[in-house]
Length: 68
Length: 461
View 1 (tube, chains in turn orange, green):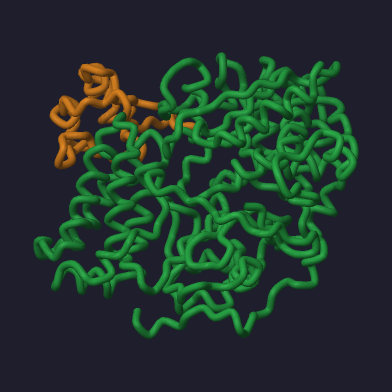
View 2 (cartoon, rainbow over the protein chains, first blue to last red; view 1 turned 90 degrees about the vertical axis):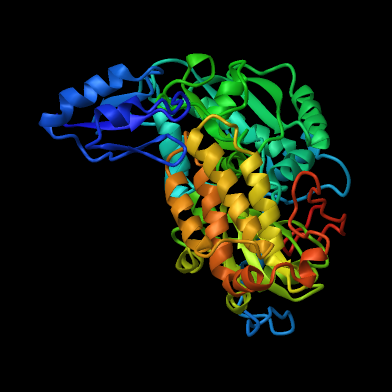
């Protein structure tokens, strides 16, 4: 079962916590919004990704099971 | 750009003229004034067959959905998704479905849906009722742009003409939707019909899973439904007698720009641009480029217009598609840089303000384009645009930012020389001319024109 990251761009308010907690996959654009690498997460990063998602003040970062 | 070959109408290229007698289809019998009444509609098209046996709880899908599958009909709202596939998804959902006829038509360069509803409302209602029966819906909601007053009145009258609702027929409702570029986006429409603002929502759930009042919702463009009304009567083979194998049938297009009779025309997919321009009485100025698909669409330079066929196969090499049937010619006198700047600002203003990359990115793009137009751009302004484009694409909840980026990049590509001239020398004479590209502040109002005889493409406004 592979997982990947997704941002809900409507609820995202550019707090930037995610980029601090998961710099391996998330950078911030010039306005502070996350730029996500959405290739499947390796198992080693999964816990970090979940922690980043939980830390998002607006719950805009999603760790999703690959669809299909 | 200066060497571009202008489109001329003196030498019409090969048109699929053998098929011309088969047109009009949708626009058959279009009244000279006002809307077609129910009795005239039935006299021309006959009674719609009842779409028997909805797919729910049955092994096979309904007869109509199979028929639409074979017809190859694809949605006419711009995305071109196969209609039968969409209907099956709704038909197989567990809860009772709702059908929405989408005539929000937020695209300023498109008039086809409002024109269709204004003149031939029963064709759209027929299609919507058939679709509702096929997917097991008990309700059809017709959504019309609030600015299209005549269309709203026409649909209201047409619905009254059909009262009382016969057994097995869905209840018919009419709703006006705000005039906004993204109001017709599916999730925005659902959001609005559920009492929210007409702004897109984060998906999933997709409308076919959970839409209006959390019920599975089939949203079809008004023209798509009109085609369904005819395919249900005439069959899928009949539909395929026109068009190309991958894009069967006819289509409504809104032709505007320097032509004698701008308006809404029914064409065969694959017809040449020249034949369309001929049907509109020819050009009144040399077109230097054509915008296909509206403000999320793609420019095609004048040198390619001669002999261009309006089909997927011919447009794809240019990265273009008909979208919701928009063909807009830009005259040689216009300044494409000033026009792009104006539309880019408008597109930025049409962001619903929900997604950061769209709000900030489209604004930054419009500002950068304007700086180039004024000759005030930093060096590397085009790299800045490419960078902004990559920061905007695929980062919104809906397709609006992607469409806007597509439009701007296409303009920078096709009008590269003009942009380079402006970057160096600033405003040109053309910049001072009145704007050509229609925006809601300067809406497209096709001049009334003679309604054509039934044997040729028909101009209906």
